[in-house]
Length: 333
Image (cartoon, rainbow, N blue to C red; front, top):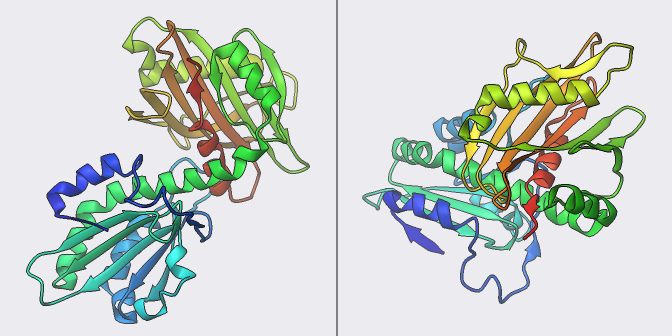
């Protein structure tokens, strides 16, 4: 297990996404367990869980996820005490293990990937007091969330990889010079004019990926206003609504889109957009997430988007699935 002080922790955040602890590649790890978007918080006693420590962890991780039409938490935090951390619970995908030790002078943060299972990320925080533990957690929580988000994507990617639809993958290679692990169950609805609509339809749900490509002139093309203007023009042209004259657009009133720069997106520097789509002339709506990336081998911007229509149902986990598939996008060398 790695031991590090708080100043060095940021280095672990940068390296632990792509590296494992010594021996991980030498041993066959068990598969990690736990519900989708679930964190297991291990405390020494119920008082820690019911008090300031547990409340601080819940307040952060159980915030509402932005970009969903109904309130849904980012994560669900479950709890056990240390004496119940048996072989099964130690394989949980996302673990925070807390300890109060009055004999130490300063807080200690320990992190480990794939401790008892794979994929897995464990953070242990030991502190001399509850107040010190809370301060330490608050200093690390944003980076920890990024790692737990990555664990969720890793799990979905591993689940979907064996069912990749290679016909669709080959179409993406030919048209856009990218690969993306689209699983079975999807079909290509539209494929023309540097645009592809990849669909999955059931009786009560619609899921889709949109891929489109445009010339890249300069960094202004990745400006948030430009990203939304381009999106609106494309979905208006290619995604019709259920009645004549209706069409998809981006919601800008109920929930404004948010943008995040991702320098380390797997395919390269990207801008992530999250928000809601709706239909002009109808009452359809749902969440979407997209990534706009400059192709390093050409003067083009490729945008890959996932969106969901599942009225009156929870959509967080479905959107996480789509996000994990979008994260598999890579440019063909």
